[in-house]
Length: 266
Image 1: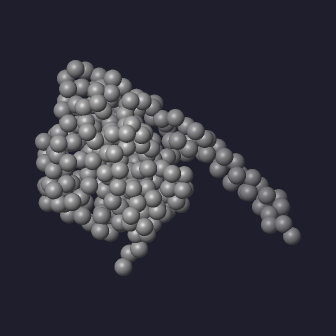
Image 2: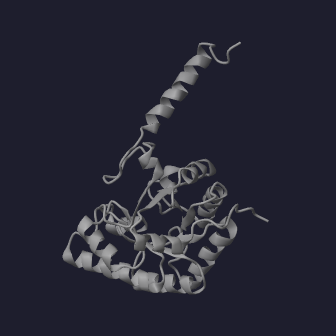
Image 3: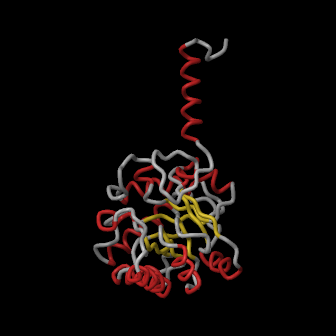
């Protein structure tokens, strides 16, 4: 039997309580055991096994090629490294859009095989709302995601969403519908700060912003962007460390020591 570690970690209800108390929620992504351990030890509230790992860990140009098998593989590794944080796993493209039964199977499989406590799916269109409601009804916690949705890259691109009145109204309506369908939180990605502020004030559940201003109930970043590991940075990311250069220099120094016969020391 798989060992998922401590299953009595942070709960979705605690996140809602924190919103009511005005306590900001901190979230980051992870794609393996080592980073999951580090993030959990640092006190991160939500660790998202995001489909961004398609680009960060697997070298794809978009999130679309990622399979459910690959997602489950990485989510299980992350979950084994976590003792406290709430671990949420993205459902990858075309693992939940075909039908509600497909979504139930994919989400249930992820929870059973990996030990994560919740799943995340993109979009607030009627089919997505119905899917969230069904998953919530059978006890699978769901995080929503509106605004810039990377799985819709070929339709939306990577531009900021919600910049026109009609777009803003649509995103607001989607966020409200997700909350009413039973989502425990909603990611707001790359939308104007004033729109995120309005959504956050209207929803009883937490909003987690990424490129959506400072008035969301929490913030999430792709860890590779935060640490300076990504080759390309999104415009809303903040790099706290240039780990790409640090690692490159360490490897270069090791290589030179080997070539100069300075490693290992006799």
